[in-house]
Image (cartoon, rainbow, N blue to C red; front, side, top):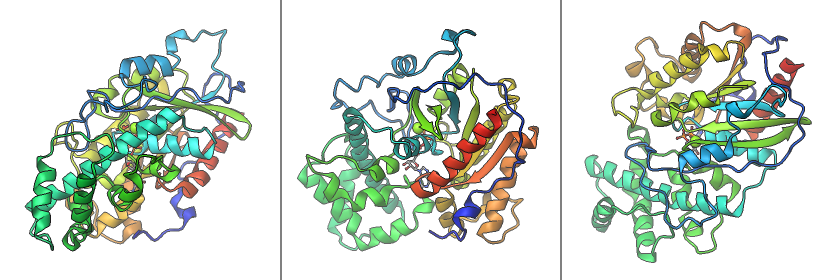
Length: 403
Ligand SMILES: Nc1nc2c(ncn2[C@@H]2O[C@H](COP(=O)(O)OP(=O)(O)OP(=O)(O)O)[C@@H](O)[C@H]2O)c(=O)[nH]1
Ligand SMILES: [Mg+2]
């Protein structure tokens, strides 16, 4: 990673500590069980570049959480069901942010760190998406190679790449031996490795090399995703999922909602009784456009979303914990794609200047909010150690506010 900052400086708290307690429901519950976690791509989900196809047909019947509407009503206590004499029993946290900003990664880190174990059906579900992720990555790389000025080192790989590009299957299951070999040959081609080094130029799922390097381990009948695999996989969220956990003897409920435009229409249903918002903003996306319209700059969209949430009347006194995420990707990208090309107000400088600039944009979006009501953290959601530190700080802060 190209970034030069200590783990302490990654957690940059620019908000003033406040004793002000936002109006929130009582938090006196002791329930530590995991609510069913709903996650997956439905028909409506849109992936980075193209529509995500129908969910994996191979998923077992236990994974009943494939249809967004059903999932949403099962996994969430609708606001309308709550009455004044039945206060919420947990501190309720809501994860918001645009698609692929790291919301689910934060939720999964919470599950791993606070020992909310994954069920067999969840492992099965994630495994299906890991195959899908791998195939999408190699396809994206083959396409990028085709339009690049680089040639495969082994000319036979050109034919292999053509067949990958032409393959319209979704691949949610174990690859055939032939396909796995093809993927490996393409991935290990020296020219492909050179192209991968330039990956900032074409939007590739950040975990591509992680999964491609582990293909042998993954493409086996008894493969079960490791904790790291769960963190690295991208499974677009449709509807809502939530997890209940205990931190510092306090019960929390963390809600995660899909960030694609189509999912945002349902966000407001989750706003009632929220004690704090975790907003994920992937700062590495400054050069990317939204897959929903292929025009809107992703960073601009995320910032305007942040502004909207910040100015939402229901959150007038709700603290926002802003996670400036994907610092690792951002710092790698800076050398290849100048930030000033997309943000002319950035007059150059080193990585720290660039990070400060991004933070200033976020603060601008939060501008109308009292400083005591937001805190900003620079983070890498896939970094479990960093997240352990960061989340513990945040949970303590939330509890302090509630006292
Ligand atoms: N390198 C890197 N990858 C990250 C980071 N945070 C998340 N990712 C990866 O980015 C991808 C998308 O992350 P998710 O957490 O699923 O994104 P999301 O916000 O839940 O997306 P939606 O469900 O579509 O709204 C996953 O493959 C993650 O492993 C980060 O800080 N650095
Ligand atoms: Mg998600």
